[in-house]
Length: 192
Image (cartoon, rainbow, N blue to C red):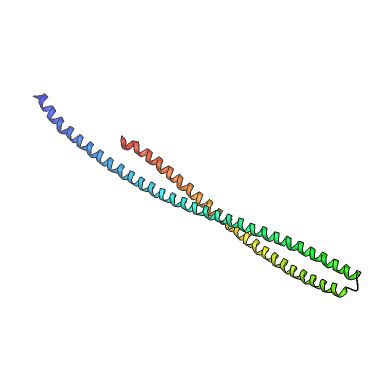
């Protein structure tokens, strides 16, 4: 009789223990599920911020490329202006040489002095015109130099913005890596 009553007493106790264990498993699963969802939300948010930073970095890179292209175009314009100024300088030297020749001809031939004087005046007018053109070319060179300086300043600002974006992207990558490590730590516990 004693043997038959013992299994009846242990059976309700075993059932209570099983129920308690089942409740504990359900509570632990709910807690772990909430933590995993929270971590998944954080990972999704971090990935969105990383994508946004990468887009901003790409935009800044495109702006930098445009600024470099603009600088190259301005440099070409400056080079063209320098070539034009050199050509005007050569023409001015030629005009001065012509003036000297005309003066020599005036000295050598008094009979053609009036004619040579007219030629000399024309040469002087040409020299004045060339001087005006040279002054305009120098002014144009100064304007182009100002534009080149402004483009360089813009390039420096773009580079600083790009570095800031890269630093922010690196920071977001570090956060993402940490979140992935945390998720990896939680996943084996959930499987057990």
